[in-house]
Image 1 (cartoon, protein in one colour):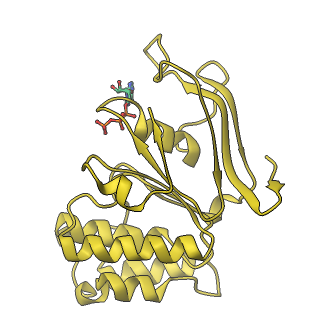
Image 2 (tube, rainbow, N blue to C red):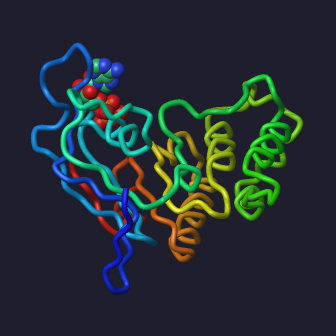
Length: 210
Ligand SMILES: Nc1ncnc2c1ncn2[C@@H]1O[C@H](COP(=O)(O)OP(=O)(O)OP(=O)(O)O)[C@@H](O)[C@H]1O
């Protein structure tokens, strides 16, 4: 793992000739190996048809898929520690039986004594309105909001977000987009997927097609 700086640009994560083959299958997920660089303060969209490998790429970058020599090819380079990477991939993850407030408190404690929760994000998404509700009882969109609040903290350097706008009403979607713009200004790099036409074009600096 190394960090690369190039004048003003600072590479957060890089893939070189990257590919993955799932257990039980013989062919790699992508036709061509992927080479890309994501810099600090960049929002990059992942686009492609169903099954093209968007979630797989996010799982690989997040380390959810173990790096096995016979399944993974190429190189993945990042200079940021795991704790500064936020992932909302596959199902939103939280403690279903705990209230929204207890989930938030627990995560804040797990982030260390400093308490790194982004209160501005929580306010913007209006998550405290549901403080007393069990996470399992939230609607899809509110689960998505809780997952974002739990994953992203004030020191996050790279956010990997699978369909973060999925299930959100237009008002909440606008709030999430405004958070993305705020984070970009603060130097966070974001990689996100979306199936909805126009979503990626609206917010992304670049789109990577799979
Ligand atoms: N656990 C798994 N085992 C074997 N094959 C898998 C597994 N998960 C995904 N795949 C296959 O890998 C390919 C890429 O899947 P992936 O979910 O990454 O695509 P995607 O672009 O995110 O799809 P979608 O747009 O439908 O969410 C598909 O052919 C899928 O069937």
